[in-house]
Image 1 (cartoon, protein in one colour):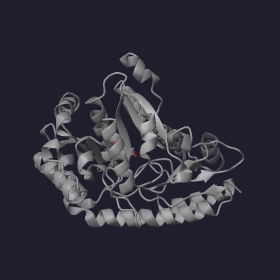
Image 2: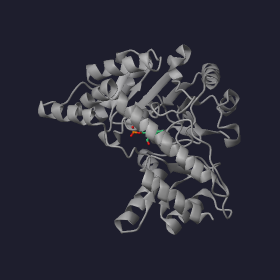
Image 3: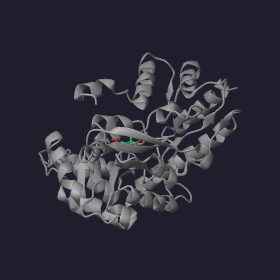
Image 4: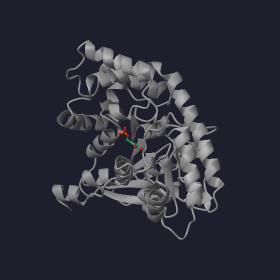
Length: 387
Ligand code: PLP
């Protein structure tokens, strides 16, 4: 077991942040780079949310507030979880955090002991493994297959479980694949979770972004899973509020006290006026959210169509989120070489598939949360690079 400082020294850097930084520094040097590597909405935060925050600051709402979150926001979150997602958490089970990442960290901190195993399902978002490492846990992996449309199978999870496996992290809609969990998969998940006594951490930060006939289903909408599920949420993606740092976790009652202590000693509370803005987001931003979602879908359609016209590139339309995860067969390149080549040759930054698991050597992740002009130009450049 590594000591604490060693743990942090051994962490790998975030590969999505790294590619972003590299793209940004090339742009700063005056290079013509289109950055499709990042994971953030290009839209401005809806103005009613900004106005409410400004008003709150001017009214002096700039002090410490209740550690788990201001009561009005926790109530509003509980309502959303109950009425929209069919998850029966009480407001007292909600902790408002500075972003979804912190919510995940607190979730892990509050229950992982040294060498406990946490399972993640590849392709998986880049920060799960480092977060597990940071709390002293050990990551075990399940690999989902693109040929199977990344279907989550109970048997795969069961086979990877050991006596030390304490929790599993699920992500729906998925980053990078956009895959949205189906009811049958949630039922299979429930069976294994019960059999192996697993806590489920369900990262649902892209819940507002699902397309066509792929409705979002929250893991904790299954009443049996509710009892063992920590739901992690964020305002970053759906409300275009990445820089505000606002998220939350909803936990089973027995985990609340440990999680709240972590919050108290690390953060005291989440920024007061940002929480007030969060209420406006939940109550009064539906129209804006749907508008942004529709724009993402148009862009995804365009990008999927453009990519499939390039020889050697195969791209499914994602069910949710705002990424595509095409397979690219080009010159025998692996995903790092592909990303490097695109950045150096044609100035397009994408994220290598292997950042999401070693099996995804032929994939790159492309973010469609960019302007139409940028996406159009990027597709032109990629067609040229692979021709
Ligand atoms: N979970 C997933 C799958 C993400 O893609 C992200 C952001 O990239 C987060 C969680 C964390 O988002 P935030 O900390 O901005 O709420």
